[in-house]
Amino acid sequence: MPPELIVLALVVIVALVFDFTNGFHDTGNAMATSIATGALRPKVAVALSAVLNLVGAFLSVEVAITVTNSVVNIQDSSGAPRPELIADGGFSLLLIILAGLVGAIVWNLITWLFSLPSSSSHALFGGLIGATLAGLGPAGVKWVGDGTKLDGVVGKVILPALMSPAIAIAIAAVGTWLVFRITRNVAERYRESGFRWGQIGSASLVSLAHGTNDAQKTMGVITLALIAAGEWTDLEAVPFWVKLLCALAIALGTYIGGWRIIRTLGKGLVEISSPQGMAAEASSAAVILTSSQLGFALSTTHVATGSILGSGVGKKGATVNWGIAGRMVVAWLITLPSAGIVGAVVWFIGNAIGGIAGALVVTAILIVAAGVMYARSRATRVGSHNVNDEWVEQTTDRRLGNREETKA
Amino acid sequence: MNILWLALEGAWNVLWVGMLLGAGLPAIFAMGIRAMSYGVGADADATDHVPHPAAKAVAYLCFGIVILAVVTGIGVIVAHGLGAELVFDGLVPRFVTG
Image 1 (cartoon, rainbow over the protein chains, first blue to last red):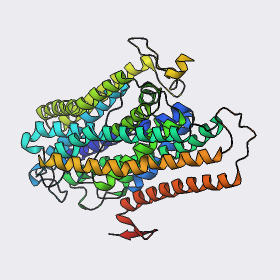
Image 2: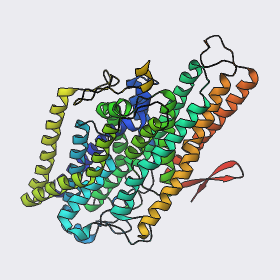
Image 3: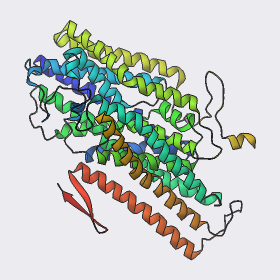
Image 4: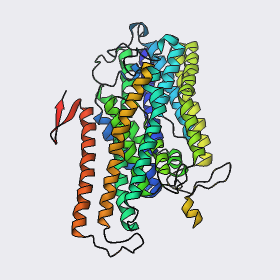
């Protein structure tokens, strides 16, 4: 087996692992509110979301191989890798992709360990930017594009990330306010059961949209690696087996469920009732679908978190835990640079060792880091059994509850 | 500064379309639920309440609008994925391969 093929195999496997972490990191974006209000039992919620992600991933047959083009210059505009990067059998490009993926996964696992919802796409872009900076220097990164359209790291990643949570907060707050205003004299029986259905429907839509948006990024990265190694030549299509494996990986990740993150989103920010849950998910679905139609790239995680906060802002008497929200914002701000630093460091190590041994060491670093974080997570296990327990701040012992309930 | 302007323009478009769909549809859904419970107060024990036939029709109309919008939304995702576009001639949706 030629050495490039072994490195290619490592890239494919690591990319699928990233897709898997993308799935479990984002289960909460769609399902946290339905789980928190009891509209769906936890296991049923993650199963439903997994199936919809699987279906969604197959719907995204759009050309995905230019996905990295908006932030790094490793391909030309048609999607073909730059010739000087694949002169050595694709090895330089494969190492950059591998290091970038390792940076993304490590950051996804760290934020999961700390129960913080952070953007998987920011982690992926961050890792790739870091590895590209290390491998090709500043010229390898596309910072702002040419100014004629939203492009580059600033236009495709940073500006949308600053604006999308604000948009989601506004829409969810207005939605929640309207819903409570309209149903203020409605008997509890109709309100709870009615909105549960609305909640399940809107959350399903978010899951479907997530599958179409996110699985496609990994498909693009794997196809790019295949092209670099000379194993695939069609720039217009993704091989079927890549699509199948990516769809399965993101669905499996979703089904495993990032319970720590689901708990933070469902219980840590706002005490959610069914009407709020529906307003939040409807806002998320509307923002994600609208922006993907309008070509405004944004992160599902930022939108979902903003929507949940908005549902707390819009309900009279509800308490929003701004402390947790603040920690999340910090995690969002450092996701891109942190994944980038990991990607760059890993690239330097892999490049210094060189050859196939370098790629193997990079993969070994990932396995060790993942193992350590998994072991640490066992100390405070969160699963379907305790995902809805009352939220108690670890440091202050403060309980988050509904102000009205506390008074009563 | 051009790129900032473009981003603001994109955000503005997402905000108003998103507001219409993301806050408007839950509001219509809420009206449906309000119609279903027509005749019972918030505090009443509603276990043996039967919705008024006219109110029920209004409620189903509201739910119908929401379901139609969601189905359209899924249609847009599917069409987008298949490289086609969902267009509306008058009110009848139609797929166009582009």
